Amino acid sequence: MSAGEPSERKASEAGPLAGMSMVDPELRARPNAFYRSMRENDPVHFDEKLGMYLVSRFEDLQTVLRDPITYSVERGYKAQYAKGFFEEFKQILERDGQGYFPDAIMTDPPQHTRIRRLLEKAFTAHRVKELEPRITAIAGGLIEDVAKKGEADGVREIAVPLTIDIICDQLGLDNVTRDQVLRWSLAITAQIGRMQDRDQMRDNAKDICELQNELITRMKARQADPREDMISDIVHARLDDEENPTLTFAEAVSLVRALLIAGNETTATAIGNLLFILATQPEIARELYENVEDDRYMTRFVEEMLRIEPPVRGLSRMTTKQTELGGTRLPEGAHMLLLYASGNDDETEFKDPRAFDINRSNLGRHVAFGAGVHRCIGAALARMEIKVVAREVIKRLDNIKLAAPVDEITYLPTVATRSIAKLPLTFTRRA
Ligand code: HEM
Image 1 (cartoon, rainbow, N blue to C red):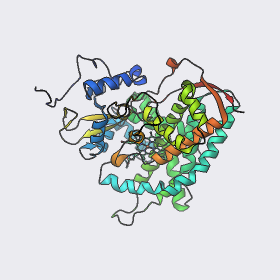
Image 2 (spheres, rainbow, N blue to C red):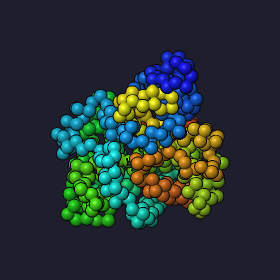
Image 3 (cartoon, rainbow, N blue to C red):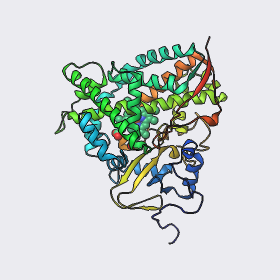
């Protein structure tokens, strides 16, 4: 093969990536050396144990994200979803959860275009703006309670309950417990995390049935009696220029479910990362405390945090035809994991990528929210939430420190996100 000719790679049996795989929890916990090695040596690396091509370079990610027809979300997502157990999973949902409702937003254009326009009805600038004072009140109240204790698990007692309270408020789910939402959220994300066994799949399917039954009751109530919340926005969404101007009930169920989950673990992960930075990087923490009233600073801080530690590590796509990417020939049906985290770490795009630098000229170029037609619909809301929470934490907590050695921090077992599982902290109540 001549230099520059595309190769259809299988696993590298030798070389710098030999034996490395995203199924390894140690590697998933500290992945940056692996990402760099891929970018340098084999940018579209076939991870044999995972059975996926890992897309690691910023430029190749852009190519994929700008071409949703060649690189299908729908096929990639389906191939990932409940992998190995899909038929049994579907049967459980049909039997006990009022149906199997495929994710309407995880589709390709033109179907995706209609669904996305309908879902945007729940994300108007007006809705996001209106949520800010409510989010401030929820965050302030919860952090105030924790502040008195002097110690807490930053993930389980701050980030997770906070995001659950916020998303339930946004959706209008006022009758559910935090524990339920947490179980539901983990059960759904496990379907794309690729690490569940059959018993876990059954437990997760049971939780998803409970979630669907609850959502359907609530949606029916909002159909008859709309309120100022996102469930009402979705069940009443309408596009007058479309042949099918409203969502089917199955589409609407899948969208409410998607919002509950997509807005939950991702934002909780970002808040966990914020607390981790405050506890482990005194220089960055000091600057943040000094600049908390400076809105421009806060905006740039959140952006750089999302770049350097993106909550969503990687999501899938599948090729709909044979193609070539970054020098690798991909067959039709190639299952890919788009490593947004590696794109944000790519030195050809971000100079000195491991340095936290809020003055980068290309700060907003990161792909923590993806890009192209599937770019995160909740990005404005998520940014606002993280900024509000950062402000409320800084107003109330001082001397935030890790109460465990840093190398004992573990991460949730999934390739899709890089989420701290437990974050023991100590702090004082700010005077
Ligand atoms: C820091 C928090 C968040 C991060 C890092 C994040 C990240 C992402 C990413 C990377 C995608 C692109 C998916 C792809 O390329 O296949 C995405 C899509 C999406 N996000 Fe977010 N997200 C966050 C918060 C939220 C929130 C708060 C909501 C809603 C309440 C939300 C709802 C969605 C939805 C519905 C999609 C699918 C959009 C589509 O396919 O058209 N996300 N998000």
